[in-house]
Every structure is written in structure tokens, then in C-alpha cells.
Length: 164
Image (tube, rainbow, N blue to C red):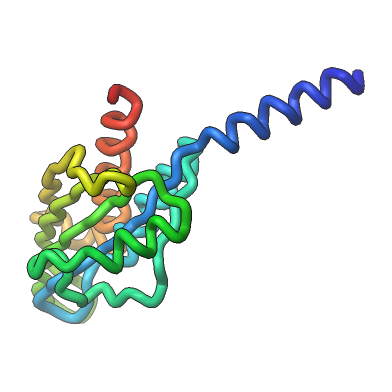
């Protein structure tokens, strides 16, 4: 019995040590009261963590920075490397929020995502996810839409990493 538990502990440790580490960087531009970046972040972290990845970010980085457009990702690569990341997920989110009344908002969001290898700086994979709550304003809130975008982004990145 003891040998079984030691073997199980060893296998768990090996799978943990072989887990890929991903650093997440998000920028968001929006028109309206607030954006979806924090919910997108939660969706990405939730999905990737449940798939066995180590996922982290730098809380000192402001979602409203402009590093992507100005191609100033040096600090992001530095922070990722210092944290031991294998990959960086860079997200550029653009949201349009229009208040319908006190309870409802119409949301249209476009999320461009980029997956970089930390050691080489090479862009490995990119894509875009477009979402809105057209006709479902009462059913789909900002946080739900953002979380769904995050999970969909994470799923695409996970599939890419599995097959490459």
C-alpha cells in the first residue's frame, strides 16, 4: 500500500514538473462604462489551470497600457522569463459597450490573441474571437461574455500546444 502511494506521489510530481507555464498579458480598449478584460483573464486562467498548465500574470501591468500597438513587449518577455514561463499569451481586446437602460448593456467585443515562445520570442500562433450579446442583452452580462471569450481563447491555445 505504501509503495502505491509513493508511486502515485511520484507520478503526480512528474506531471507537475512537466507542466507548461504560461504568462498572460492583456490590453483592453473600450467605449462605455467598463470592459471585459478581468472576466477574459478569469476564463483563460480557469480553463488552462484545469488542463494542468501553470498560468500567471503581473498584477502591476495596467489593462490600458499600449504595449501591443507600439510593439513594446520587452518588459512582458522579461517578466515572463523571470517567472519561468515557457509561453506568453498576449491579448488585445476591443469592446464597445452601449447602455440600453439601467439594467441592460449591449456588448460587442473583439479579442486578438497571440502565443509567443519566451526563449526565442517567436510568434507561434494567433487568432481572433468576436463576441456580442445581440438580442440577448437580458441574458448575457459583461462578465459572462468576457469569461466565455477567455475560455474559448484558452481552448484554442491548448489545442495548438497539444498538436505542436
